[in-house]
Structures are given as structure tokens and as C-alpha cells.
Length: 182
Image (cartoon, rainbow, N blue to C red):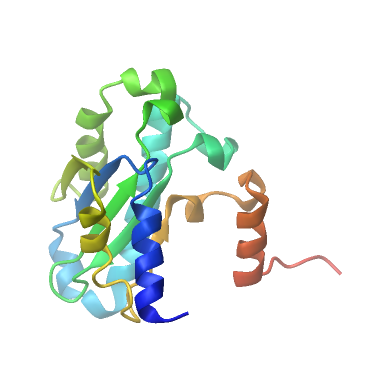
């Protein structure tokens, strides 16, 4: 698949109606800039993983969201940007009434910044907007084809046995086969 087509398909995917909100997560941590080369991508991944887990805890009112199936948990895709100077994540997430139902009645827009600040030691900033057009997806995919810019999916941080989608399980098995006992 050509790079142009890959980006176009990604833009189409991220513009789907279920991705109702665009979120920018900026750690704003000095240690990420100082130790940029060896620490940044893995630290960003860990911070996003912890953030997704805490959002699930808040939205689902459970202390152990990892016991829930993926179809019940946060659906978020994050694209890193400016890893060499001002690292941050551009995300699209499903905060639709159809998905969260009565859980959306909670003050989630007020809680998400508090959750993000916990994982950034108070330095982080977050912006939450409605994902209203393809412009958002086009903007957040600008750096997606750089070799050091892997995108993250909230389901990456969930146990494989809790993923409901059989196609996703098969894809994950191709990418990173599980070891079977001999």
C-alpha cells in the first residue's frame, strides 16, 4: 500500500462518527526533553496506558477495568507528534452516548484533565474538542509516516483474552505471536 493511500485510509478511519472527540495530551515534562532519545516514546506510551486505565476506572466505576472486555472500555487512538522538541499526543476517542450510555452523565470532561495531570506530575495539559470533520484527522496524521512515530490504540494496553473482536485478535497474533507451552 502506498504511503499516500495509507494516510488517506487512516484519515477516513479516524473521521468515523464513533470517534466523537479530539484530545491533545501534552506531558510538558522537562525530563522528557532532557532524555529525549532513550526515554520519550516508552514514557509516553506508559503515561497513555495509565491514563486509559484511569479513564476506564472513572467511566466504568470499577477498580479493575482490566477484567472488562475491550468493547466496554475506552476506545482511543493516539498519534505522537514533535517527539524531538515538544512531545505530545493527538488523539481521537469515543465519548458518544451510544457507547458510554448513562456513564456519560458523569463530569468526564472535568475529570480527564485531573487524571492526565496525575501522570504528568502536574505539568501536563489537555485539550478536549468535538471531532467534527476530517480536518482533525488530517492534522493529527501529519507525522504518522515517520519511522519513529508509531500510533497507539487504547486496546494495546488491554489483556488479549479480553479483546472481543476476533479480527483484532488474529491481527495481534500475526504481529506478536503468543508463546504456547510445549
